[in-house]
Image (tube, rainbow, N blue to C red; front, side, top):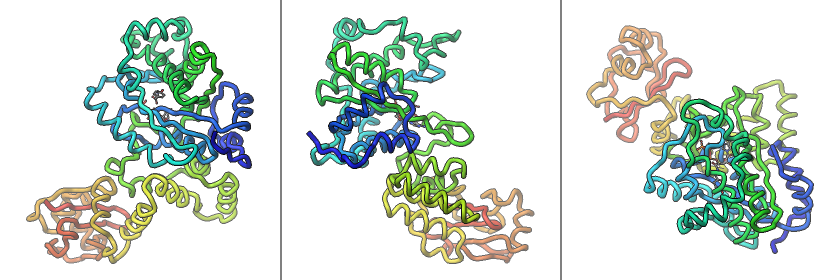
Length: 428
Ligand SMILES: Nc1ncnc2c1ncn2[C@@H]1O[C@H](COP(=O)(O)OP(=O)(O)OP(=O)(O)O)[C@@H](O)[C@H]1O
Ligand SMILES: N[C@@H](Cc1ccc(O)cc1)C(=O)O
């Protein structure tokens, strides 16, 4: 049995952070957790090569449970990823090949692991439901698991209703069986690790309750479900991977600089909520930040604190330092502080980037090619009026050229027009 942090009421903290959407039996879970350390799990399907900031919510909740003394299991859905969760999805998913899914399982596993500790009494466990489904035969599945599910109840679940009631393609049998698979995962984890709680975003409620019901039927065990609200931006759109403008956890898909900038540009209406969801600052510390911001009457500090905290959690302290260095250097006269890796981040997604041939180096041509000017005559106007900055230095000479000496690390030149229009040239 693991040691419980008895001075800290985790469920009360989650409630104060606004992190609880639904629970199967709040009083029973609270009683259980006050008596003993529990084992809980959350699943992540390999439906892309990276998780995103929406999935960070349950990852951090797993971490919150572990910090409070409980044992987390992170399950990567090697099997469920082959089927595709239909919950609240408007259309059938495309099936990915087994090779692709296998590759993504490894990536998701590597992405979740650093958030958890694999040492000590309440060491985290990584599980993969392919381990039990690969060897299950279809008749066992239908007889031992399927028999416990009523199709009548399944078609009434909110998460698949829109697909059932719609004309057209509806939902395939494949996706319809998804909740049986997730349901049985809970049974297996209960059997193998004594797992008593499953968490997930609120879109997972139907699948989670399939698991609590099935565990009661198959193992006569009373287990629990808890969901977190789905995080949306103030414009109402969900943070997700199928939505546009996904912020990925993989630094090769969203650079730490872009990641930092994303949090920095959080709307004032969202920022304190995001501090509660995405950081380990206490609820009291966050309330104090809000009070100070309100009293100052100036630009709030909350966005910078959020950007620093979440970037450090996901990418480490060095990434925060690099993001701050890049932000400052973009507006500084001296850009010598920028490292080659900083330029690589900017080229990935930090700035509009243009690959130009090394001979296209008249400044007028370059400005037009980088879309900082819509025409050569406009480019001339910008140069003459002193609005053109090359690597931090103002250039007013109409005949200026960009030469090897202006190539940082042999291939980058930073251009700015006016106060904040940037472009990065990568010389081919
Ligand atoms: N915006 C969000 N807010 C809170 N939780 C989320 C959000 N997006 C995903 N989750 C949760 O993260 C866990 C893993 O989700 P997953 O990685 O499958 O993301 P997803 O965006 O829902 O994927 P897909 O688009 O393939 O369904 C689930 O419990 C899910 O509910
Ligand atoms: N259905 C979850 C992933 C998951 C898979 C298997 C589980 O046992 C639990 C959760 C999702 O799409 O996000």
